[in-house]
Image (cartoon, rainbow, N blue to C red; front, side, top):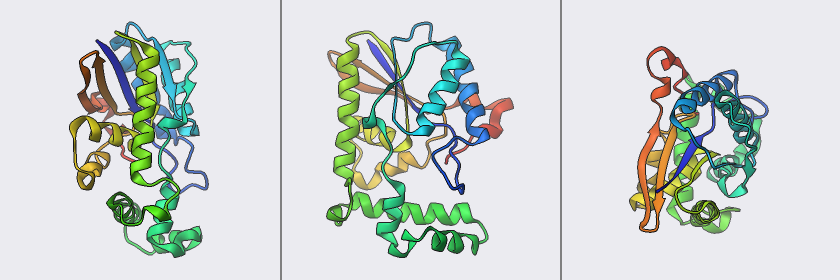
Length: 230
């Protein structure tokens, strides 16, 4: 039986000019994850990462802590959806990032305000009524993620172990398919995915199965402050 571990990237730089960079906490999360995986994975056959900077930084930091010298294969199939586009399609005036920043800054809790906005933007995207407005509609995004997993497993062959450094969207799309969750409920999974959480997919000639979802016990106890979701 083969195993694919889907790893959500470490905390990115919310509110910074370039979101696609790990924060200081994100680098620590990736290192702690690597130290935990070092004792759990005696053998590793492949490493894959999306092409985003936060994927690469998470992979490199984690693998260094594991003492693994494999270079990640880059796969755009495991990239996240364009969250900026989703927000702008929901609220067109937020094409001006200054307007979004100003509105968020006027709220008591900008992070909570953004999450509420983003939840509505994602719901609009997934609903399917405005697919023509998006560069990558939800069904296209989901199929892209599933094809990336298919290609990885076919390339691995039987009884292999791989790490995939990706984002919450691809993890959600893959788990939705494995669990047969309706579209309107799929992102209930996404909102609970911790940074550097681990989702385990097992595969064999009989099929593919979700073995564990969003496992992040490596951040419990003394590392509890490292549990983040954005």
